[in-house]
Amino acid sequence: MGMLMNQRAMALVSEMCGRLDELGLKRLEMGGALVLDAGVQAPGGLQAGVELARVCLADLAEVGLGMGEQGGWRGPLVRVRSDHPLKACLGSQYAGMQISAGKYFAMGSGPMRARLGTEPVLRELGIHEETACAVGVLEAGKLPTEEVVEWLAGKLKLPAAMISLLVAPTTSLAGMAQVVARSLETALHQMHEIGFPLEMVVSGMGSAPLPCPHPDTITAIGRSNDAILYGARVEIFARTDKEREGILEELGPRIPSGNSAAHGKPFAEIFREAGCDFYKIDPRLFAPAQVVLHDLATGRSRTFGELRMDLVAQSFGG
Image (cartoon, rainbow, N blue to C red):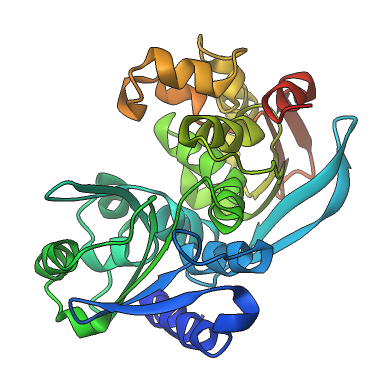
């Protein structure tokens, strides 16, 4: 793979800095750190969302947008494909870093998580990078302040000048696209939670419908989650061994979002009932609607879960 994840992401950020007008981005300096605004004050756009997702994935995955059909629904789809899914998704893309400094709060993604390396999932997978730079993506409606940059620099043990942050809210087109690009990541995270032997995973791909962003934050968050919980289909290619030939049939049914008692209601409604606190929501809900597991050792494929495009259409406003 060549460069480490933060180096790969930094190379992509440098490329984006040469395309600011084309991508609808605004370049800022905050407390010495580079900040790329992709939807707070800057217009952003679909391609900016693709590039944000690529940064989240440390450029270890292909991300694309296109029209398509899924479960009888036709419209724009966000597609992700990776031959390095554990590093790309769990090591980088998963929003496992809470950015909290003063009154500022954001969910943090990207390879800066691997630079910090303190999350349990990173420790379990042995993912940690000693890099001279760190790149992160913040899902937030406000740009980070100097206080936030100082806090991050302290956490990452890096000078602010070596930190790059990309920011977009879910209410923006770019922010919505990068969140919906998490279909594969949610499947892998759920597989980790149920104890699936992740060393068996070879490659993965996923697709989810892209909704129109909504100016109301909770409605926008609801749509982005419904796209995955009810509309995402993920394909995982794994290689079992003789001792665990039945592992796909045993654990596969436990991966999709339908395992959660909260399944079946629009996410905005679930979110409001939880007091707008993600951590009060059943974690089993954060998974794709449907997962197909392919066993490279036997050539067998198994499908689990079902798409609920009726709920997707309801959430997306018809």
